[in-house]
Structure formats: structure tokens, C-alpha cells
Image 1 (tube, rainbow, N blue to C red):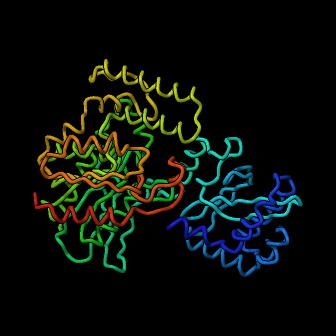
Image 2 (tube, rainbow, N blue to C red):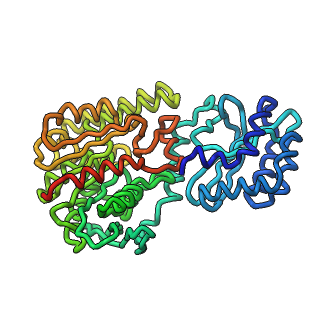
Image 3 (tube, one colour):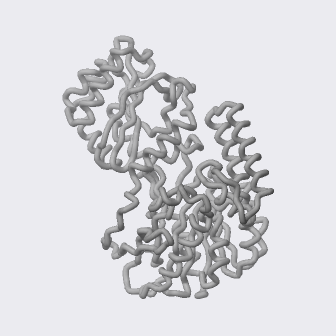
Length: 476
């Protein structure tokens, strides 16, 4: 859903509010009371009560019918209303407001309220959370607050770890069938998405980025792997996506002090590739692997360990060690969110100390403890993996794609490094999408994780380019 379209749903209310915004005064207890009452009435369908709390210029034009129509459009865009939080001080476009988080089934917004000198509402609208800053941070949401919002939105939209996919057939003939991937910890719920027809189809296994992720790679209200699977199926290409082991077996993964990147990603991707190739509707010599972010970085490792894979698609693939990428992310975050210099230095020193520890560690006896969310065994398992060198040695074709406004994986330090290293290698294709971010959708305004709280979809051109590339590759 395009956020610009969705927020225009309240055009009658919001348009009047902007005209009167110059009259807005600092929020008082009375303003907060009017805002809370108006918001409660609006979100619970008591539309006739809402204008009682507005300033006269707005109240005369915001009828129950216009408010009801606006609410219907919001729910059509974001799904059923779930809950409203409390109004808290914030800043939008340089002026003080009251803002409350509003949760819908398919996305989140902030209700924005401000009042005139008589404590009557002159601004009553809904905005993407990334547009609303904390009052104490001069309009910039803190990194911790932005991450907390993202984690809460992700949890609200991802499916339960124990839930298996339900078989269904779409109006376009695309079929989705449950297909679990085996792992040493137990089955990983998966979804086999098939085009209309009987096949055999070319197919691709989808491998998520870092963290405990469901099969859709849910990030906030966004589901990039579901977008890709559906789009590829409409183009005649099958896919298998599955819950990560760290998602389904989170506790067991977290308590394993010998957990490695192969336990997290590689081994399960290989199992998924073997399983997919065995399906009757799949062309076994035309099975590819597609990875995103960390998953993309590991595509060369996956192909290196299974010579039958027909090729690899790498979306936002780091070309550098993970710790180097992490250091750049700290610096980028500091520039965009006002992170204190002391916090930046502390983070960079911790990363440098971790690198020094890994450089002298014995692979057979990893250091104890954890660094960030992962055990030292995980970090050490990546220490001697050089993805660019491994990719150079592969015989299979590769498609390497990058969003030009990605703030997590660098278009210059990473994508350009891939191009420089592999430009003369036969069978390698590069795509740069100038306006897209890390999720391969139009990049947000903040350039931080706050952008991921806004719903969006993978750009159709990216999916079309992937489909065209797969169709152009010969059987392996």
C-alpha cells in the first residue's frame, strides 16, 4: 500500500487542520483531554461526537459522514483497527503536537493532534510513524525508540512460529502449498508457491537476512519474500520459502554456544534446495538460490557446497566482513538520528575489540560469551569466509542487485566492490535501482529503521528483472 495514498484518506480533516495550524498552541491538559476523547470516538465509530472537540472552523466542516468515510478508507488501507496508545508530546514539521500510536491489522500510524489557544483541536490527522519525532529530541526519534517500534510492528505482523501455511489457490491460478524443510532441530514451516499450470517450472529458494525471521521475511508490516514469491509465480517461476531455524526454535538456538552461520542459514538453505528439486512440478536442473542481505552474502557459500544449484541471486549483499558493515551502520545512524558522540565511540571501540578477539581466536575453541545478539561461535564461523573470493571461483551465473538508497548495505562500499571484483567474470549481471532502499521498495525519508514501520511492497521492476534473468539461464 502506497503510504501517500493511505494518509490522504483524511483529506477533509487534515486539510482544514493544516490551514489552521498556525494557531496551534503548546499542548495543555485540556488539549490532551479533547484529543483523547476525539480519538476514542473516532476509532470506535462514534463519529458524531468527534467534532465537539474541534475548533469552530473545523467542526463546521468535519461532519459525521466525512469522518466515517475517512475511517473506512483508513481501514481499507491498513486493515481492521486493533488499538490506540496514549497521546504523548511530539514534533512534526518543526511544531509541537500530541501523537498516539494507532495499530491496525496491516500497518501502524500515529494520530497527530494539536490545539489552539482555547484548547480546541485545530489539527487531527494520521501520519506514518517515521514523520513523528520525539519532542525531547528536537523532532528526531531516538534509535532505541525507532527500533522498538519496528520490533513491535514486526511481531504484530509475523505469523506464529508454530503456524504452518494454509494451501490456497489465487484467482490468477497461483498455488501456495505447505512444504516443511527438515532441519536438525525439527521441521521448518515452509510455503511452496507454484505458477498456474503443470510445469516443470524453474524455481528458487529464498534465504532471509539476519535475525530470527519468518518465511515472509516480515519487517514491520512489510513482507518482501511474500511479494517476491507471488510476483515470480505470476511470471512462471516457482519458489520455496521457509521459517528460519532461529525463528522456529528461538530458545534452542539462543542457548547453543556452538551455533554457527551454517546452523543459522547455510545448512537449512541446502536442505531446502534439495527438497525443492525433488518436487514433481519443478525442473530439477533449474533450481536457483536467492538471498537478501546476510542471506545474499551467503549465496556463494551455499552454491559452493551444492554444485547442482543453477545460479544465485544476491539482493543487497555485503561485500565486506559483517563487523565492517556494522561499524558503518553505527556511523550512519549517528549522522541521521543525533546519536551522542560518546555512544558512537563506545560502539566503534566494541566492534574493534571484537575484531581483535576473532583475529586471534582458535576456530576449534571459540571464545565464550556473545557479541551483540550472537554467540562468539557464530562470529568466528564467518571470520574466514570471504564471499567475494568464493563468488569469483563459482561456475554458476550470478545476479547481484542493490538499492541505490540502501542505508544498511552500501551502494558504494559493497555493491561497487562486487562490480569491481566480478565485472570481468562471465555470467554475472548487475542491477542498481537508484531510488530503492534495503527492502527494494522506494526508500523512506528518514534513512533509518523508522522507515520500515511504513507498509510498502517490493518494486515490481525488481521482481520482473529477477524473473527475466532466471528464464535466460540454461539448465545446469
